[in-house]
Every structure is written in structure tokens, then in C-alpha cells.
Length: 605
Image (tube, rainbow, N blue to C red; front, top):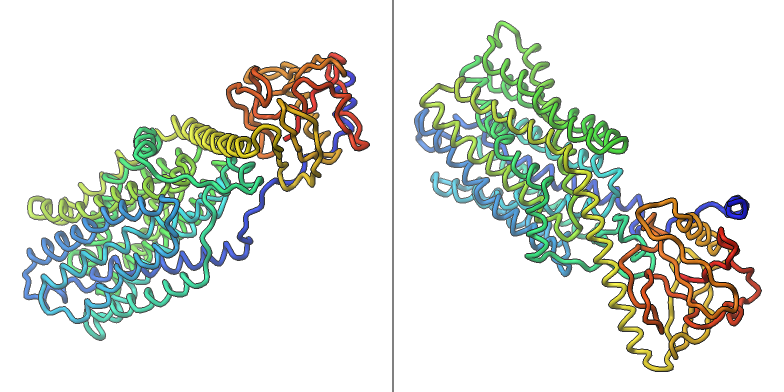
């Protein structure tokens, strides 16, 4: 032990990270900004009709019942009914390794926003119905693509905060769209706001396509860091087997399932609340729009604070993030019930606006944290589908919600129907709290699957190189780029010359520290270091250790070593049957003694 402590004290600090993201921090921030602007403009389109629903009903010659049923219910249902399968299709395409996600996002915007632009020329309701349904493609396909890209631009410790930024953009887009529609619509006509939003969407999508870069998949996954350090990109792609794993993941099931009841209140607010405030609560169209605008502004604040607080709690203990999300959804019920049932004229416009902002803030905390959970428990090649499924259930809730509310309105009146819809947040909150029971285990399982996939790919590549070398050929064992290693002939291995990239002394010492500390039997999760051969004994020497960080070999099941029939870890022994004294040292000192005094193994990465 004394020898080990002395050696440990002489070891230098841990070497720098083995892999740096090829896209600079500044460029990544620009990409996030572009994705946010695109998302904001797409979601600005989502609720453009609400402030001018009565005017649109008069344009199409509808009565009050038809207004609620067709414009409020059927139209929104069609919008989300197209958006939901579009999200699933786009998510599947995003998870294919050969698809450029930025280009896919550009075409999603073009296909979805062109019908929005054409809304200005509608004459009949069926034309408006068809164009609004097609516009749902853009809103449905946006989330899977944007968040799939974000997962490859930032590590887990920042994903909740970055997700919050994107969700702020979408909330701001909805609020800005309502504000534009509420101000421009009465001054011109109800169709002009659709042009005002669609034209910039197409222009910004083109700028995004020209100024952003496709990030490498899985670049920030811990289990893939060494693979990227060796210059081998991760090439995983979606498959039916991986889809089955996704669907069996408890965290995915909870986040996806909560979307149906959790989206009912949001669908009700987005579709009916503006008209409810002006027709039933006695506010002007402009004042009602202000109340909803502040609900959205409060939601933006809630997303900012919720994303930051959720990320801080996640970094402290993962489960706290789920408890925060579920608790805030439950607390968001109270302000909404007051807005529905209270005498808002007696309260005054100011108090109503404050209450609306508080309700929006509390109810919006969950959003960025849920998307962070989805990014963290799914592989890079399944995130698009996972987020599409979440978006699909959200869209179904928002689309079916107005239809359900429209039916309840005729039975219970608007106030009673809105109270029933608001109760959807109760089961949603309990499902989110339940995430605390499984999210940690699901994240660990995902990293394990990634590690195995990376290990299998590395072994396949090594086998291909060995086969290409043939008998008497050379095998090169590269070192990670951070090691600064040099090429050195390490002697014969099973009849083939082995060329190993020898690390400098500092890195050797770091590796020695790792092997020594892991080999003292202090960890019950890994086999001890095999050290016991003396110099010149002719024994093949091996070591095996657990996966500790991005600079340590992933431990796998024992596999045959080169030139030897026994099992070992992934490390290649410098000699299989040759004494250590036979190895050319190039003036480098030996690695030192193992705790029992035997010469440690000379395995290189």
C-alpha cells in the first residue's frame, strides 16, 4: 500500500478531455438561436384564429354553435390530427443516420407554412379546413427535429436549460401570434395575420439552412466519448428492435402518456379562452388578448425558471427534476380555476392579468424538464421518434381537447366544460411524479446500450484490420488523440508484428494509477488487476477495469486476446508470451510495481 500511495502522489492530474465537439460554442449558440426563431414562427401560426374567431364565423356564415363546433373543435382537431402522424414520420426520418436533419427541418417548414400563406385567399370553409390541416405538418414536425439536434449539441448537464430556451421561443411565438392577430385582424381582416406569420417563416428557414451545420450524433454521450476520440463517428440508426426498447422504457411511457390528459387544458386555453374572455367575461377583444398574452408571457418566465431550476435539481439528484415538474403541474390548476369561475370584472383587468401570468408561469415549468428527460433516456438514433411520440400525444390532447370541450359545452355550458378540461392536469401531475422512480435506471440502461454498441463496432473494426493484415502483417493499435503517443514496434504477437501507439510517460502514469486503484480489490463491480508475473517470466499479462470516464477502457465480458486463447478485457497486451525485458523501452521507465511487488502489466490503449 505504501508503494501505491507514493506512486499515486507522483501522478499528474487527469489528462484533458479526449474529444472536443467539432462545432464551436459560438456556432452552437447561433444554431440554437436559428432553431428558436424557426420554432417561434411556426408556433405563432398555431393560434392565429382565436382572437378573430367570431369574425371568421361571420365570414363563413356560421352561428354560435357552428363557431364552437367547426372553428373551435373540428378545425383544431384537423390541425393536430395531421400534425401528430407528421411528427412520427419526421421523427423516424430524423433518426435515420443518412438523413440531414437541418435539411429535413427546412422542408418541413416549406411544406407546412405554404398552406398558411395561402390562407389569405380562402373563400369557403372547406378550403380553410384543408389548409389549416396541412399547416399542422410544420408544427408537428418541428419538435422532434429541433430537440434531436439539441441533444447532439449539448451535454446532459445543460439540456434542460437549452430545452427551456426553445420552449420559451415556442411560447413567445404563440403569444406574438395572438398579439398580431388581435391587433392586425380587427384593423384589416382575420386572414391577414396568416400572411404576416407565414412569409417570415419561409425566409428564416432558408437562412437556417444556409448558416447551420449538422452535428455528429451522440457527440456528448459519455459512453461514446472514446469512440469519437479515436476518430470513429457513431453511426447508429433507428430500427424496429430499438423502437421496441424505446416503447418498453418506463420513463418514455410516462412522459408520452401524460400528454393526453395534460394537453386538455392547454387545448382549451388556446382555442376558447380568448373568445371566452370577451364573450362571457365582458372584456374587449383587445383586453381579452392581453389576458392571454400575459398567460403566454408568464409561461415564458415559468419555462426559464423551470428549466434553470430543473437543471440545477437534476445535477444535484436526478429524481428532484421529476418532482418539480409534477408538483408545478398540480399547482397550476388553481389559477386556471379562478380565471374560469371568478367574477373577473369585479377583480379588475389588472388582477386578472396578474393571475393569468401566474397560472401560465406555474403550468409551464414541466415542459423543458420533460424534454430533457426524453433526451437523456434515449439513444441519439431514437430521440426523434421518442420526441415525436411525446409531441403526438400532446397534439392529440390539444386536438381532441377542443372537440371534447365542444361536446361538453352543449351539455354543461362553457364554464362547466372548461372546469372538466382543467382537471386533466391531475393525472398528468401524478404520472410526472412517478418518473422519479425510474428515470435514473433508464438513463443508466441507455448508456450501457451505447457502450455495448460502441464496443461491438470497435471490435468489428479491429477484426477487419487484423484480417487485412494477415499472417505476419502489422496491426496498429492507435491511441486517443489527446495522448500525444508515438508509434513503436512492440514485438511479435501470435506471429504478427504489433505496432502500438505508445503514450508519453505522463499518460502511462495516469493509466498505471487507474489500473493500480482498480486492481486493489476495492471495487466489487470489477475483477481485480491481474499482476503477478515477474519480468522475464514469459507470462501474458492482462488488466481489466470498469468504465470510469471517457479516458478509461470500457469493461466488457472477457474475450480472446491476440495470439492467445485466454480471455481478457479490451486492452491488448504488449506481449503474449514475450518477457517484458524483451520490449524496447525507448528510454521510458517501467510502469512501476503492483501492490504485491510484482511488475505491473504493460498494456497500452
